[in-house]
Image (cartoon, rainbow, N blue to C red; front, top):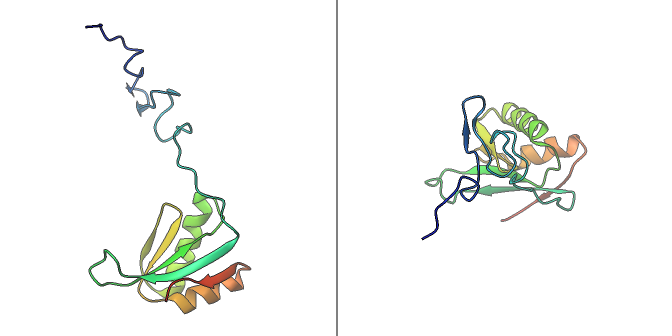
Length: 121
């Protein structure tokens, strides 16, 4: 049986300076770009839908396809949540607003110049 070396195991995985590191690029996991998930470019149409699946029957309004970087997406999510008077989050490039606010969100996005379609029923 062959003896393992550190390079066979993927290299450095923790540093007291930055914490957990990527074994490929040796950057901090927060700054790692080699395994960063790539968001699809999309077709320029923002799709707004309502979903209850996996939420114990509670409805949320989902906004998909907004072509913004993460920081701007979080800011847009904050604006939409404030305008609807409800909570929510931004996960994996999708803005979730608690409650059924599809029409209001569509109006707000159209006022900002986005091409908006209602998705789903």
